[in-house]
Length: 557
Image (cartoon, rainbow, N blue to C red; front, side):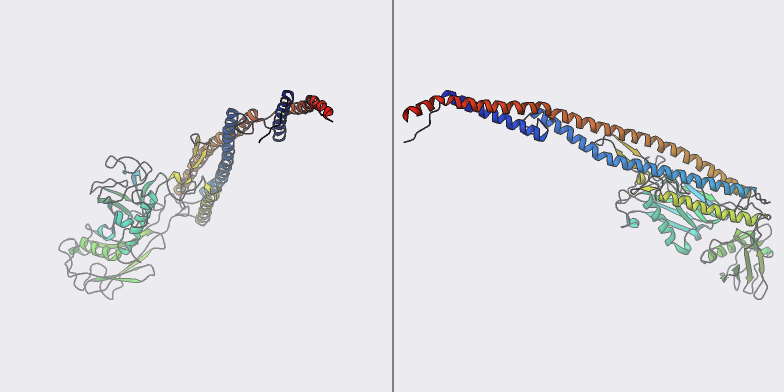
């Protein structure tokens, strides 16, 4: 049999009041201890989740502030690098100006290499066959499947110095990461690999990329003997010279105009060289360049005309590593004379040609003295040595410019130097919000000596024209540096402005979140005092409510 305790209505009411007061007092004490009036979604769902969203965004933006700060330092490092490079450029200007004021009677220019440059860049996004390279939007080329580019690179001596270059899936092999996205640098590396692999039979040319990404072929020799010819032979991918088979482009070097001359050994006139030819049986010559090894040349039965002997001699010269690109044979139909000369000029050039058989083609027969010729140096005066020293100093400054550009990095990002031609290689991406739909891409540059268009001096400042050309390059480089410094300055202003804005926005978000959840400590302290008093009163009221039952207890006693 169950039993229950019977409480009076007054007692029950007082107990409920005490429970309510205890709950309110607990809530107030929680707010006082945490400082928040909304501690969970149960307290106020709207305020709780709104404040949480504001706090999360504030946290995300605070994280971006670190990367923005890093970006500011990266730009400042680049700007400092430009300042230092500008000082080196000014020093190079001073050196060149000093060389120009140094007395010299030379007024010409040094011999130049043959330089052949493509009409468009390898990273051009124009369509194949429409004047572009058929590159993708990101500047890469697709060489997968059967896609290819084929061309020849030839020097001044035609087939004897011709290399066929083929770019396709087989030639790239495992040297590229993705055959569908072959970069300009990977194409350049493959071309030079094939030119180098050609060895003694290859064209005397080196491929490079211009600052704007175009393929450039330069001869290793200088002077008018130096030539480079690129001829398209097949394929369906344009590397800047077109895709129509047979299309070719040619460039020639320039002889020195500083008074220097090549060494040219002229044979005596042999009338039949220009008509019926001279029988090649037991005909031969030896060639010695300077004090180097003697190269013996022999010929077939013939008879050979002067032009045919030129072809034979040049072919054998090209097959010799020590003579290739350094000597060239010629024939004058006007005088019926064969001659062999150096491709370089200067007093250090010397060539000796002797007959080695019993048939004379202009250089005597075996046992004769042969023909020896020497070149002549530039007609510069006493300032030559001083100018040469200044030219060396100038080149050392260019090395320092390149090193300065390479060292202007911060946290692994260098806005002043990249190894290749793709601007993406050193572009700094700055994100300004948590979704990355507000950002800034700061494009880096290539500010080593080559990227600034400043070339090393090869002629020892022997002529005023050489110095003036160097000064022109330095002036252009200074203008480029100032322009880029202004660009970086503008970028820095934008980034610093966003940095300040983000800091203030983080403060606004934190304040907004606090306004929705923070408790009024004065109010809660007053509530705590009032509830304590109310609790005491409720206990007293409960005691009074129980007095009637206490009276009955007295009667029972």
